[in-house]
Length: 209
Ligand code: SF4
Image 1: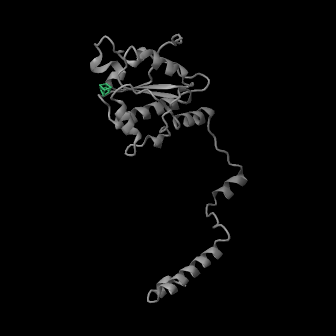
Image 2: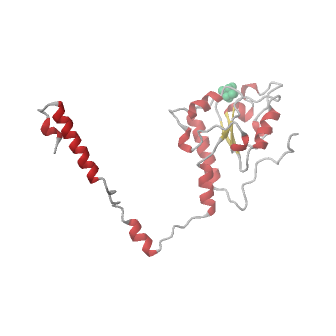
Image 3: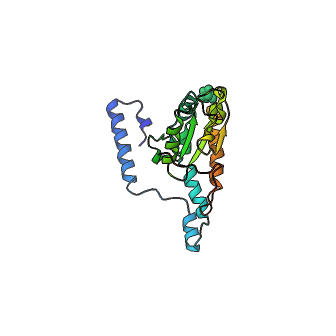
């Protein structure tokens, strides 16, 4: 019984018609609608097997769930925050959770100028992150110290402190640039092997006390 047939009738009659429609729907909904996809019925009897490699599976999982550690000492941080917000939405890449604990993080995005006074703390955060881990140097300051490079107290690039995987230039780089760098990191992770993981770009330095 169609509700539209009652359009000339009172509210009570409309409610009654709506109730009848819902009850009819409930009766029809006792059984689930059959799945029209027949591919499973066809594939399973022929013992179809999907082939992949452990490397591909593991790399897919790792690049799809990069969790950044919190290391935002200066103004590039606002572009990182913008990248996390709704317009750019880093959660598309499974990395919207910024971890307060380095033990739960596997990527460091160095969003800001680093001073020598802060350097031991940044190195300690990196040392405490779980393996495998990666570093994105974000912004001119992250790459080379930027406009503060000649200052006595500024580290001329995070790669003096931690091994950097990806460099994202700009002062500051826009969220699009950061996302491009993240996609480059995804590509790098895709090429890693479990047996012989990619070597880091600088030698492992002694852990800080
Ligand atoms: S690169 Fe520019 S925006 Fe980024 S921390 Fe340095 S001065 Fe600030």
